[in-house]
Structure formats: structure tokens, C-alpha cells
Length: 165
Image (tube, rainbow, N blue to C red; front, side, top):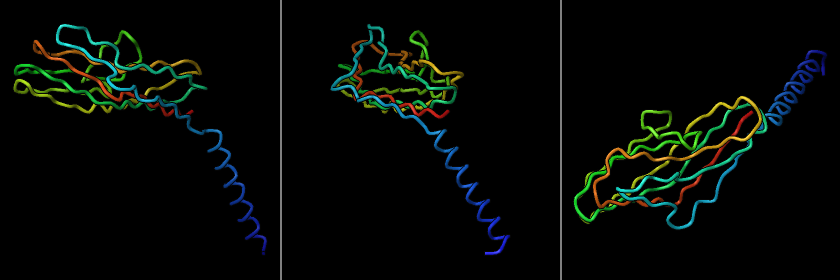
């Protein structure tokens, strides 16, 4: 092997080592919940909506968190009904879910009496994390319209956080 090829091989080896060393130190951390069993939460037109799910995550350093939520919602009414709800992953227990906010969703349906509607609650949102420490994430739903005698049920609610330093 001539000097040029040796130099090139050495450069490739040191570059490959640097790439693997960087990748190993910047490994992602994934934390997920077991979906809640059966009906996770329920609410009616005359009740406040509870926090649907909460996840506490301990970030090992500054970085970014990709937070996703999965679950479904079934709403029913004895007579014709309209519902309009907003959902969102938020960082505070007192934050209000908004379809206009980052990762927010609008859920709306108008149905005949005795009907049901199922809605996918899949959501995602990115959060910057300035330093190591505990991070809290909540999946919240806010009422817009919910006609009398309607009720909604939440199923299979679960969070997943992918953290990258």
C-alpha cells in the first residue's frame, strides 16, 4: 500500500471512529407508558374534563423531546348531538388544550340520536429542554360544544417520549 492509500485509510478509520463515538454519546432515550386498561377516563356534557394522561420524564441533560400520545375517544348521545373539543399535549397541569396551539387538534361531530362517533387522539409535539431534570407532559381536552346528554370515553391512552441530547 502506498503512502497516499495509508493516509486515506487512516483518515477513513479516524472519521469512522469519530462518527461512532459521536453517535454513542448522543444516543436517544425512549420512555413509554403501558396503555391504560379498559376505559381510561370518561366525561359528560355537565362535568369538567379530567386530565386524560400524565407522563413524568427525567431528562438526563439539555436537549429536545419528541412527545407523542396515542388513544381513542368514543362519544355518544341519546338524542341528536354536536360535540366540538380541542386536544393537545401540554407541559402544565393547568394549561388549556387548544387546537390552535403546537400539535393541537380539533374534534367535531354532529350525529343523530342513539349514534356514536370514534375519534383518533394521536398527537405529537416537540419540546426544547434547557437542562437536566424532571419534565411533565399532560394530554388535555377542552370543551368547545358538548350538547346535553352526551358522554365521551377515552381508551388506550399512552405517552411516548423520545429524548435526544
